[in-house]
Length: 302
Image 1 (cartoon, rainbow, N blue to C red):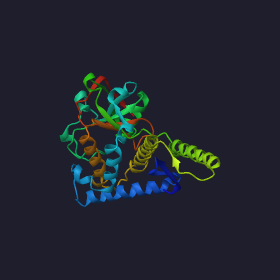
Image 2 (image 1 turned 90 degrees about the vertical axis):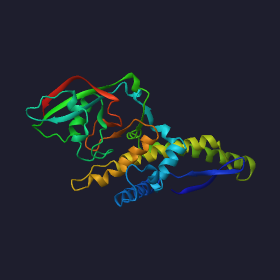
Image 3 (image 1 turned 180 degrees about the horizontal axis):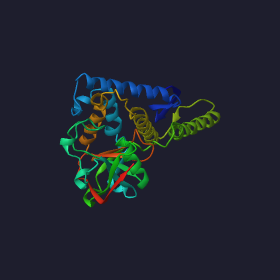
Image 4 (image 1 turned 120 degrees about the vertical axis):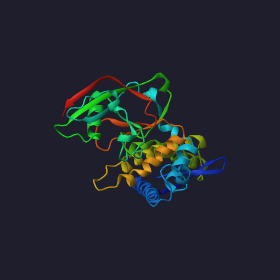
C-alpha cells in the first residue's frame, strides 16, 4: 500500500504513517500469495496440519499470529457461545429409504468420517452445525449435504449446556457484510482530520510541523483495520468453493492447520461462511459434546 508521506509523530518519535488504503487488491494478492505458499508447504510435507509451531515459520501464519495473538487482535473476532442465544443451530443428513433416525444418527462417529472436512481430516469427530434462523439453518444444512430433489432428509436441532456458554469461538464472518470502503473510512477520516489540523497549524505557525497524533488511538484504529481487512480477505477469498477435481486433502490442509492453531489458543470452535449456501453460517466445535441434539427429529423428502 502506498504511503501518503505524512509522518505520524508523538513527542518527536516516529510511530508510523497515515496510509492510503485504496489499493486493496495489492493486499489481497499478497495474502493470497502467502496462503498459496502455506498450502504448498503442507502439500510438500514441510510440516503436517497439526504441527502448529512449524507452521508459524511460514509467512501467512507468522503474520497472522503476530497480528491476532501477539498483539491481541483476535479479540476483535472472538465471541462466546452465550452470544449465540438469539440464533438456532442444527445438523442435517441424507437418510436411507428405510432408515429410522434417532439422535445417534446426528452425532459424528469416526468410523463414518471417511473424507476430509474443511477443518478436520478423516476420522476426527468434530461437530459441524448450521447457524442462523429456522429457515436458514435448514437451507444451509441441505446445501452442505448436497441434497438433491427426491432425497429423504433428516434434520435435528442442537442446544448448549450452561457449562458451555463461556467457551470462546473464532468468528470469521464478522465483516462479511461490510464493504472494504466502509472498513477504510474510519481510518481515512482519522487521517483527514490530522491533515486538516496540520494545515491549520501551518497557517498559524508559518511553517509545516510534524503531525502529532495520539499514538494509542492511532495504533488501536490501525490494528482494528488490519484485523477486519485481513479477516474479510480470508473469508471472501480463501473460503471459496472447491471444484470437483480438487484434492480435498490438499485444499483443506491449511484450514485444518488453522483449526489446530485456534485450539492451541484455547478456542472451542470456529464460525465461518458457507461456500454452498447464500443463507446461514456454519460452525465447527472441536468437542462434539459441547452441543447436544434436542427436540423432534424432522424427516422429509426434498
